Length: 129
Image (cartoon, rainbow, N blue to C red; front, side):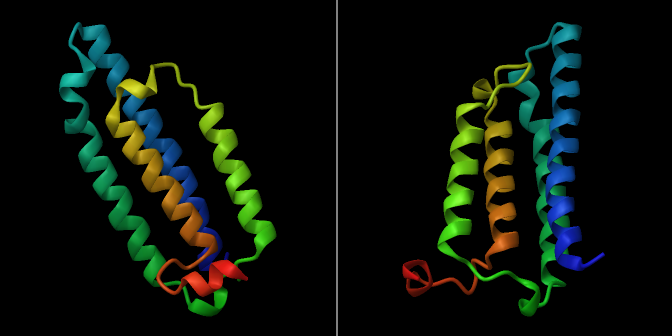
């Protein structure tokens, strides 16, 4: 498997795994009678830090030649994906109440977009193409 494909799959599957772990943690706290908002960052911060470190280390192994060129068509698809995800964003627990889930989703979106277009090399001139 190419390292770029592994990078993209790790971004997606680790995001889903961390979301499931956090939901289980929040439900367990609710079951025990504690307010999950009070302990939200105790569980989320180490998981988010692990997620960022692991994915960024894997990102450093990708050669520039493996990255895809940004096109207008792919940018339109990416914007449509983002809009559809934000409009249909629903979870078993009200996600708007948990800042850790919002931060994790933002990091996920940026990393996944970066897997298609290298943000380190992108300039305003590239966006006009």
